[in-house]
Image (cartoon, rainbow over all chains, first blue to last red; front, side, top):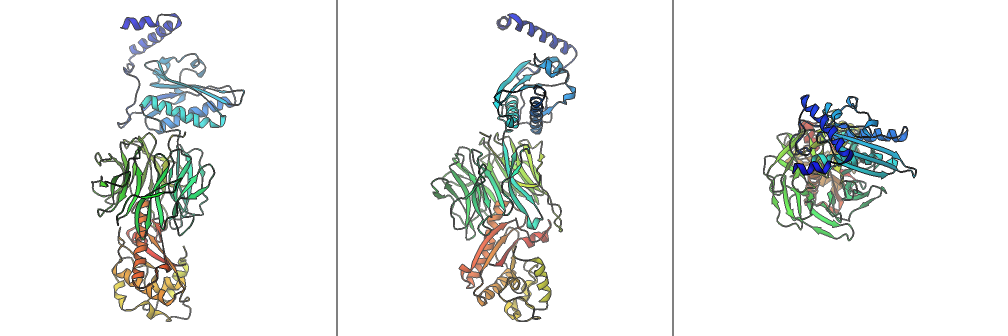
Length: 458
Length: 172
């Protein structure tokens, strides 16, 4: 067997090349370096990653001027994405031995092993005559000395940032086996002003905080935004009619918002169905909240719950067959699952405390929630049958998790205690992975609440 | 919103001598307020220093009738002290038939946003139902929920939270 595979390589330069690398490799082993990984380089994302994988992200090479600058910026964004995931530790470029120019020929893997890089990212940027940007990248397994990924992208130079996120997603996918989530956006509620006269505006940004913009002007309160499956539209609750708060659909490109249905009461807590054809939400009439769906095109309405209790915060399973929701029908706020047609409602939360804001993972395997117990709030996850409950974050007020499209990372919001003069009360967005490690604050220009993570941008 | 704190304070000072003027900011439910059950809002009407607000005005509702009732944590039932205030509101509405009001339901910050929107709506409607049961035409009573988004009292304290669990009547 071995003989066969060796014979395979016995031809021309490839053989020479391999020999050289093997020689280097042997030398490094003699010097007492870690032996190469036996299997393909891979991170197990389901374990708490105390030791992030050291990765060298080199500056993407481009001709002096704009291409060079874009190359540098792309590398910086990739680096920041990978580091932000908590699974990777980008190595300080000052430690790099091999120069970008010689890297163009072939990586000298020994140079990268010396600085403990497990993986190395390399790329080229070219501004084409037709005005387009060409970006090439390669991901190398430094110990196996193999190329793990290599792709070329053509785009408008303005889109360099998206390309960087797409490359980071590819690296993430190759090294974790999970889909990436960097080429995504987050819509949320930007908050400002005193607690009793809060201004709440719809805002959107890339998942790393870049390209931030406000979508509403703050003259009316908006709450609980959620993306459509195409990431083109947002459904949310708006007080644009101050005494008739309702669910609206907001088009990101046009900035138009449209009232969804004419219900005899307050509509709130909306979410799109997985196919994007309908919105599921609560309608409160005479103080009783029930769950309804409305077909966006036909406007056909269907009532799914019938109970004097509060029924709210519905969220579909990814295949649309089930709905998890929040109800106090049993006396306290708990999580229930019912079939897509409203039948067979059964309680799934059985721990101590009150549960709220359930949201089904895009992978279907977990439901994230807010839990209130003993004066503290928690963000946690459980299986759809209620088993395996696990808390990921805790605070005076933490609320409303939202899933990144890979179902491995979540965002939620927190609020600090405020004082009698209205000071304090800082409201922040957080990102945390499923292990509960690597909880970090997503920096926003103003206070922020109600994050909603987009699907991967089509 | 339409309740101006300054005018509220000023009016409260002006009419503070009135036996029937409710301490609308009473924090602990079921305490104190019950003692005034014998005197209804009507008995205070017309008493004052000649500067009391017009009887059908927002200020009068706030200062003399009582615009706000409070609820227990996660509760929406009308307490004995809330019933007294609502009783006065009902009488005042009967005496001022041109007035229509909106009842705003509010919650403290110790709950989640969506559930609190529902709970605020329950509270507003609990107050409305009580008024309707006392004979007020339901068409004169609108409701709206602000969930936990419009606290009247600042601070993350038990006393602020108690004030923020309310149903507040505002004149349309």
